Length: 318
Image (cartoon, rainbow, N blue to C red; front, side, top):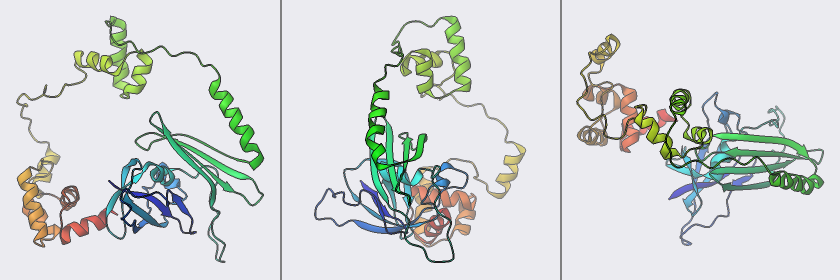
């Protein structure tokens, strides 16, 4: 699989794994430009790389791919490795970058320490940057397999503090914690526990939390929720649905776009791809297929269509 495995920031410093070998030694890494523009209001918006034009390297490596696909300015959509995704998505913490000034300044301080690994489904990334006073600003980010930030640590230490700090963390990890009972794989549910599970499931849908709270495996909790009718098993709802009248709002939308909020079938997608390849633009496709221009753009991206309308859809998605 082709992945983005390294990037160069505006100061010229490389991040990630720029020296990672490609699976085929005869291959050359691809280069592209990525303007990193995270969604405002999300944790990623606080990334030190937000708004930067980054030079990226991509190719087929044995590095683990992350969950996010990035659209390059120069064309192409690629997954990034977990290391790259975590570096881009990590907030700045308490070490903000200096505000730009009118006078030229030197390059941003390059991290002098970068380390990362994955364990038990969590990604741990440690970055250290040398400060003007000689101290190291350390940032530790812990993320899930989906890229959600689970924890952060940030602070300044001297280089001489690193070894004692490592010993302190090692000692803390060896401190005996209260044993967590292993999940019960079977056994019946008491009425009170069954009712409490139903109430908790209406508030909390994370099976990891429910597993720890009730001391039972995912499958046992799933079976109990299914028995109570709170989860539908695949195929259980294949009976003929009761026809319901369209709401007034939906009726008004369908007067404008006759097929709005209806599923696409394979034949419609084939026809859409063909019409796009023929050079038909989005407004005409919207009228022809009875859907909004936004819905046309989304479907063109999903099916990987080729043509002017698809090119415009990719630009709109940036």
